[in-house]
Every structure is written in C-alpha cells, then in structure tokens.
Image (cartoon, rainbow, N blue to C red; front, side):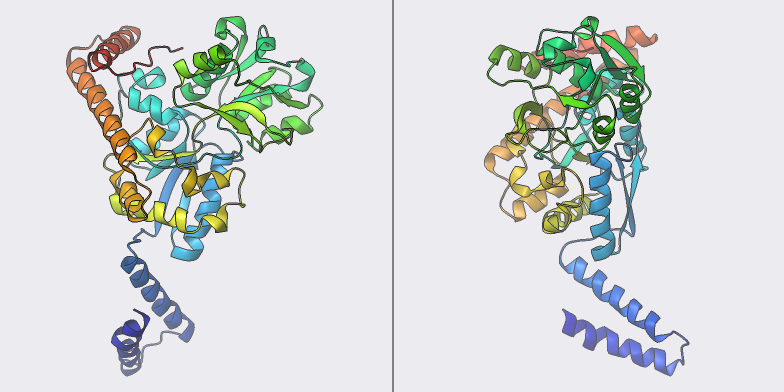
Length: 407
C-alpha cells in the first residue's frame, strides 16, 4: 500500500506542485501527503470515520465521561478524528441527543434498556419504545451501581438504610430504579426511606457532602465518590451478600440484567473485594439507523487500542473483549458491531440466538406502541397507565418477561 501511494500518487503530486510553482510550504505538503496516506490506509483496513463524532455520556468527572475522553485521545492521535463528549445530567437528556441526531452514540447505563422497553420516563407520549442497538459493553473491576453511604450515618447493611435520606435524581429512571432494586434486597422500598430530590448525578454527591442525604447510588469507582471519602462525613460502601438467594432474586426480578459481582476498584473497597451487583457501565449504544461503518470502525478501534487507554480512566479495563457478555445481553447489537465481532471470531451461535430474541422483543414492543398510539388517551397519567397495560399484555402474549415492577 505505501509503495503504491509513493509511486502512484505522491511523486506525480510533487511534480504537479513543482510545475505550478505552488507556494505550498514543505511542512504543509508533508502534512497533506501524510493525511492522504493515513486516510487510504484506514479505508483499506475497513476503518472509516468522519473528522468529528460525538457521544453523550454521564456528566464531567464521572467514570463514563473520563473513559470517553481517554478513547477520544486515541481517535485524535491515531485517526485524526475528534470525539466530542456531550455530558447529560440525566437519562433522558443523554438519549434525547442520540434520538435527535446530535450525537452518533451514547455511553450510559440502564436507561438504554428502559428506552427500549418504553417504561419509566420513556413511557410518555414523546418517547415510547426505541430501537436501541448495542455496540460494546464495559464490565469493569468496579461496579455499575451500588450504594455509597456517609460513614457517620452508621449504615452497616442494606437493612440499615431504612429511615435514612436517599437521593432521588430527577429525570434519571435508571438510577432511581436501580436504587429501588437494591433497596428490595432488604425488602425495603422508597416508602421506607426519605427521598431527597436532586437535579442531577453530581447534585446527589453534593447532597451527601452538605448533609442533606446519607445514601447515594453510583458506580463503585465514580470519581465524585472521592469527594465524599475526603469529607468529614467519610465514605462507606454497603455489601450485598450473594449467599442470600432470596434477596438476590428480589433484585434480579426488577433488574434481570444485573448480576452478582465482586468489586475491587473504588475508594475504601477492601483488598478481597466487596459483594455487590453490576451491569454494563458504560454501555455504548446507537440506534437501528446509526451508521454501520462508523459503528464497525469504532468497535474495531476500541478493541485494537485497548492496551493504550485501559489505564487512562477509572474502569476502562472493562472494555476488554473477553469481558463482553453477548449471550446475556438485554439489547440487540448493531450490525456494524456484529460485523467486527464475526471477523475476530467472538460472535457465537449462542450470541446470535440471543440477538434474535432481543430483536423479536423490540419488534413486539414497537408493534404494540404503533397500534396503541393513534387512539391513546390524551392525559399524561392516563396515557402512561394505558400504555403500560398494553405493553404488559403484548409481552405476555408472546411469553416474554414483562418487567412490570416499576417506580
């Protein structure tokens, strides 16, 4: 390839420039030829990216945002592509930018599943079930969501959270429903605690620091937890022992994509790790019509350059290829991503079977929405209640899990 470019493109170009007495400087010429070579080499490798792409992610300072920045550095250095990371203060804002076409992909959490399902904040008239497609998952040595508590609140078990002040993040159904799921471990609900409403994830950290709340949920290695650790209140993570099978079952009844997990990465965690639950975080997703070539290229780059960014952000080790859990996914994968996974031999028959099941689930959900919407009730509450009933009926008719438990 390089010889072809030098003989077939570079030298004739030099002659043309010389004959035309072009005033192009030597350094600019070298840069032009280097970019031409780089572009041709990438295209031959199947990697084709625009000059700029955009992701939505959790707010600045979070693990998800930091990982996006680390990956963006690779894109800029190796492929001359700028990654613009747009922070979203809540679940709806992160996916709203994706649906509106303002970003190519979103690196978030369980909100992608709620959007697929058309539940919680996505049960409204302006949302409904969305054709979400997964690209890649991060399962790190940390965890996607657990309870961080102020040490001075004396919370030593999940049961001790009863009567304590727990943050409730506006517009963040994935965080709030995960909180409800972990509370169910001890047979608690939001009615058993004091909800403290905050405007975003970082505001929930501030609520603990300002002694307005005692408990906040987030990824074990979330950088803002360092602020709580360094504060006079101190930081303590609460264990969720896996040997209580009934408690584990209650959590997974609400969140079947959460699995028992040992977390090692995070402030104050013991050397032997802590028993918690986890899911993919970040979960990189697009939509059904997201560009297949960009999806393929991005997944290929994230795999190829893993060793270069894995230590550059908290939890980035979770993007490793052998940590992908295709057979446990609750979302269908994007064809562009599948193309690469097939190329490297990691897309198994079991992964394809699971993907077809997830595609069928989305088809059932979107079909039910399309039938329901034209004659749906006008009122907000009436609309949501009617849709949720129709949704459950459609899933039950196909023998599919309903996820009917909600806030």
